[in-house]
Length: 174
Image (tube, rainbow, N blue to C red):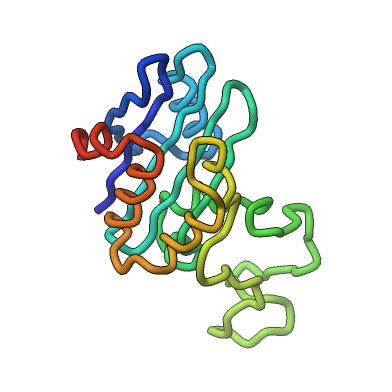
């Protein structure tokens, strides 16, 4: 189960709407969804929460590339929505690195059947741009502290929204 909401900055403050991610297959699709909700190319935030195991904030400003923060990369990697956010760039991987040859059975050359390939592991814990909300009132240190201290991601997202001054509008669509 997941929850996703768009928060668009307007001249009157933040406006929130719940959104479905069923048709979102790529980060570009997610950014397009945010741009459609934008007012005068102001910031749009996408909050995503997955089963109280991780949350993400994606920030889109006009035509700039999306900025991403994920509270727990390893947990997000087990989710189809998390996989959209965990880009090679975010994970520090080179997408053109073709050093590993994989046989048709899914094993690396010379590897026994059933053995796992030697992939780069996804880190446990926060990943991304923890300072993406600093200019909206939530410094990097506070966002990282919320990610680590809250047992439930819903509580962390509520605290993020509170710091941004949009807790009421987020709660209204929850």
